[in-house]
Image 1 (spheres, rainbow, N blue to C red):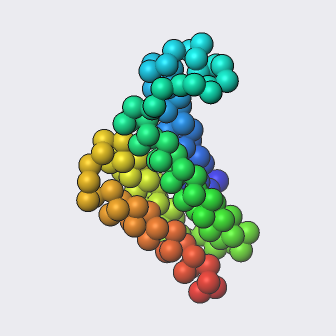
Image 2: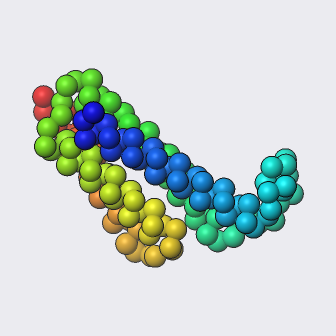
Length: 130
């Protein structure tokens, strides 16, 4: 399997980890019975849960774009050191972004976000150049 596809798989696993962390915090805050029910009258989520909810949405949006870029590159037979680097940059930037977002560290979160976009752009440019 190519590095690009491997990083895509790792990114999907990262999303699952984020979702599981969010679910675990929900169970800790509200209890398993409340979370397994209809969830119509749950209390407001904690700050960290709200961050993880936003992080989940952000990761989903970026994962869609990354998936398209990686699969198009794969289908076009474009895989080289540059595309592998772009995929690796994306994945590691998203790991950093998740940690930074969950911790609530200001000002550096957008940097990690844009580094991830840069990784996607590297792959897209390689595909378009072929």
